[in-house]
Amino acid sequence: MSTTALTGRLGEASPRFKARMAGVFQLLEAITAGSPGVFILGRLVVDGNAAATAANILGHERLYWLGFVSLLIGAACHVVWALLMYELLKPVNRSVSLLAAFVILVCCAIQAITNLFYLAPLLILQGGSSLSAFTPEQLQALALMFLKLNQYAFNINLVFFGLWCVLTGYLIFRSTFLPRILGVLLAIDGLGFVTYLYPPLAYHLFIPYLAAASALGEIPLELWLIVMGVNPQRWKEQASAAGECRS
Image (tube, rainbow, N blue to C red; front, side):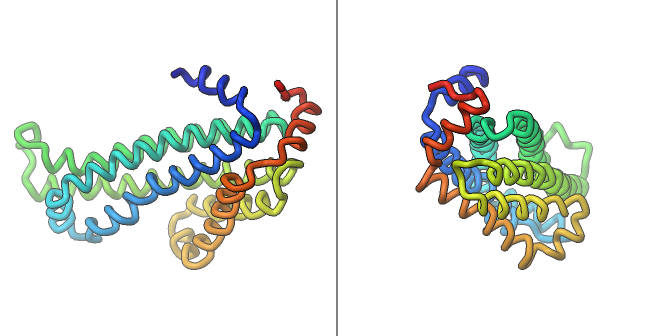
């Protein structure tokens, strides 16, 4: 299905259904995209030890591949989540909604590149004859370098995600069909992620400040969307005023 066709079908769905599906895909993205970094890389990567890291990756090949598949699913869920949030919030301000959609799609593209950096170390370590010119130590060092690139790319991804959170928080705050406090909390969460422009500062603030801001900004929104959705009457009124209502 093309993106145009998907967007068209989303546009025909009820606002409450869009909201609940946005919450579902937000949850799926959080689980599938977040788990490999925490539970796989956190378990296998030994800081400053390329040989031990390489041995761990090769010794858990299936787990590593499972992490890559999970990351791909997460990227796909992120795209659907982005489209749903655009459809849900464009009656508030179409221009800001388009900007937020552009930012999050750039974020998704960076997320896909990050996934390739995640897979690269395993492919390098399994290179066989195609990489026979390199010594095992060089291959291990190269694999570790790609893991560092994975982290750098992930930090850039978080900056764009933070910008999206700020824009989306503004739209939620200006909406009449979602609680304003959800927008305030999401915008604060986004400002926290923007600190990844300077990663040492973000790492210093992560526990407890950024972690708390992320939990307070994203979990309440996720639960509200899944359980409550939006107020359909107020959504239609705002959409009608903006010329967006199709029903």
